[in-house]
Image 1 (cartoon, rainbow, N blue to C red):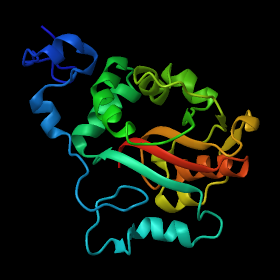
Image 2 (cartoon, rainbow, N blue to C red; image 1 turned 45 degrees about the vertical axis):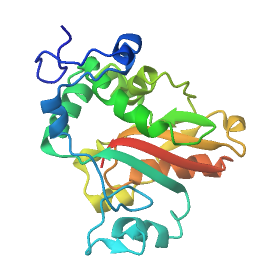
Image 3 (cartoon, rainbow, N blue to C red; image 1 turned 135 degrees about the horizontal axis):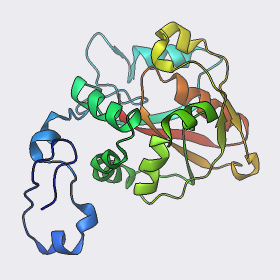
Length: 230
């Protein structure tokens, strides 16, 4: 019997022709655990996927994106980010086990959800947010590249990252004022291309906007992104 990758309970799956013919589409998480994943639904910011409430809305954008788009240095680089889930304590724990403790198999939990959203997205090239060499050595693998590999996506290594202090240790203002942390390789591949970036968590949007700006300034037509959590 297959077991839930989060709680290790046996997975009960209805036996259908589809489940027999397409095992790869099966969930790797039980119904109870999936129920604790808080999907982003309803009215959302058209740029970053944040659920909109009255106090957060400025037209179709949340206040954060409105601020970014009013900043001459940052406006117009990231076209759209799609995030799947709210970054609640439950998801934070799963991502920590995957990202920092090397529980590689947990990537499979997110694959069906990502596939579901990716089928409606249009792009020419896919890349992932890279880790610095120091961070890669520390973790042993790039958790975002592992997701892309499981999704069967052909990714292009376009960006390299300068080693900096962990983003999680920085305040919002510190993140927003960071100098450029990405450099572009193979810029000839970018000319007039629509680029999709895959990352795990959208917090302030700084990382993705740094990456998008570097890509646009090297010739990309537009840049969008998909992340697990917001």
